[in-house]
Length: 371
Image (tube, rainbow, N blue to C red):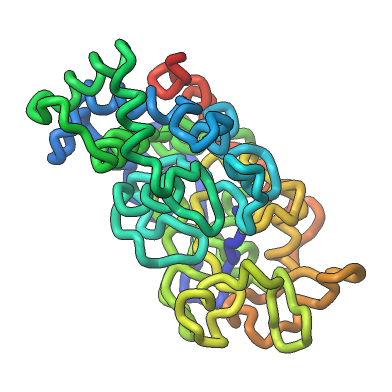
C-alpha cells in the first residue's frame, strides 16, 4: 500500500493463515528471508568504508550550498524518508516525487520511482549527487572541489585513508559513490512484529493483526500478495499490460484518458509509451506506517487513505486542477480491481500493516548521524 503500489487480487492464490507456536508460522506463503549483508560483501566494503559512508550521508557539506545532506531527505526515525509530500533540493526546488524509503534498499530491483535504468546503488547515486533536473545535492561541476575540501579536514583524512588505503590520497567522486552505497547497503530491517511472528513467536502479533494478515494474503479478500510478496513485500508479478514492477493504481485521470500531472507521468517519461502513463514502481511495505505521506507524490496523507485507494480501485479527485476519477482510468492496471471489504476488515488490514514497523531499525546507532 505504499505510495504507488497496487493491491492485486485476480490470481490463483488462496491462502488460509494460522499461527503456530514454533517454527515459521503455518500457512504463510514462502516470502523468503532477508539476506544479510556482511561488512564485506564482495566489493571490499569493510567497516571502514561503511563508516566513511555514514559520515558522508549525514554531512551537509556534500551539497552545493551546505543546506542539505542525504540524511535530510532520509531520516532514520522515519525509516529513511522525510515526512514531506515531495522532496526539496539544496536550492529549495520542490521535486515532483516523494523521498522513498531506504529500508533494505540493497535488495531493491528498482531504485527510482519511474526510471528503470540504474542497476546499482553506485549508479543511482549519480542522480542525487550530480543531477541538475531537478537539483538534489547540486554538485554538478563542483564534485571534485567539494571532495577536496572534505578530504582536507582531519576527520576525513583519517576516514578516507582507512576506507581506501591504496588510493594514495588520489580521491575522486567515484569514491563518494562507493562509500555512500556501502552505507546504504547495511540499512537492513528484519525485526518487526511480523518478522518475529514468522519466526515462530505466535504472540508477536495481536489477534487483530493476524486477522489483517489473512485479509492481506487471501486472494478473495485483500489479495495484496501478487504485488507485495517476497521478504520485503515489494515483489510483483509480470503485469499483462505493463513493465514488471511498475503499476498504475488509478491515482489520477485528468482528461478521461488516464493523464497524470505534468512532471510526474511515471514510466512514460522513459518509454514514451502511452500505456506506461502513471506507472510507478512498487516500494517495500516495511515500516509503511511511518513513511507517509504516500504514493509517488505524497498526495495521500494517511495509511488509511492509502489503503482506501487500493480497495476502491483508484481515487476520485472531485475538485481542483487535478480533478478526475482515477477509478475509471483506461490506464489503471486491470489487476487493480475494487475490493469488497467491511469496515472491520479495513481496520484489521491497517493494524497488520502497522505490525511491519521495526523499532530497532529506526533507532539502531549503527545507522545514526555520527556528527
